[in-house]
Image (cartoon, rainbow over all chains, first blue to last red; front, side):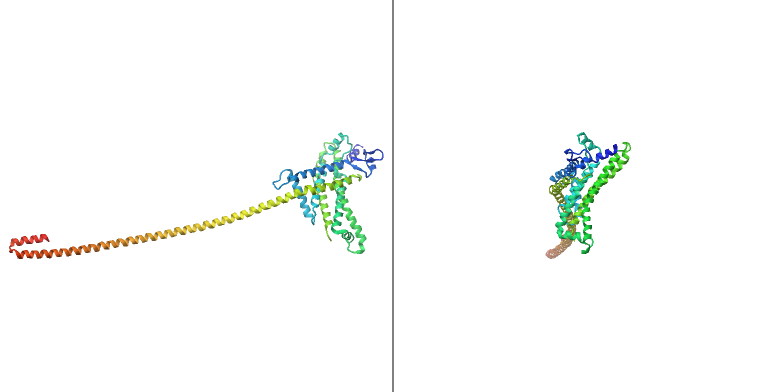
Length: 269
Length: 156
């Protein structure tokens, strides 16, 4: 089926890993990629993720180097706006003082925004260019790869654990897990189950929310791309406009929830 | 859709990027922003202060102007009254002087008159005496008598 293979081809990452049959090589099909298991890497996701992250850092670093107190202009305005945005939210939503929070929020927001924004490029543009270069699979939107979103959310999860332990101590953290929501020794196991689920759900929901939104956007764009060319605009335009909202919104939600979770981790009871 | 090493790669990338942002991107920009904020607030403060100063200076100038004007009008008033007084005094003096001069002239005339009268009286009496002597000396004829009397009258 042509349409099925079109979609699955576009949703297949460029996977490099140890194949049982071919040794270290790129996977040609989804089955081969699956057979490689954990010890393989999605080269395209990693490439775009790092490239976009570098775009962010280089751009901001250049402005930071010549940042002065004079009248800002051009790109400096944009960068300063982003910095003020992140620091404002970190100040409003984060109770306490931690010099990590605002730069973390800025990095997450801008990086995720850039990665999501790859969706604005025409579906076939980058895969076609990659095809000309002899690369079989190319997914240009890193956040439609679960590995990328989980990579971000698990890092945040580690930060949550780190600051929970640092601020509350092991005893305080254990107490928080055992005596909430029911403050009685008889219900400790019950509380523990609830709180552990509550804790684990944070990174999972964070990653899956971002992944789900962007992946769904990708799939719908692919489906629209398979319509006859003269009717594509009728669905493509509204969906693209909708994504103008979704893309910054998801970046914002990811950043906001990260701050809120870390703020909770810093709270004393 | 399988979880693989990309996850670890992304975690490492994330850690490095956040570290870089925190170390090399955030401090200069937020520092510059804070600095600029300070500068702007200082500028606004200075503008406020300057405005206050201006207000005060204006009020002071107005006050000085008003006082000066008052003083000037006071001085003019004083000058006018003094000049009036001087004119009045001069007029009074002139009148007194005139009166005195007139009085002097009167008294001089009176004196002159008195002395003239006295001299006349003395002359008349001496003439009379001389006439009488002549009459007594010469014979009394009508003609001579008449001549004498004529002379006497002419002399009078």
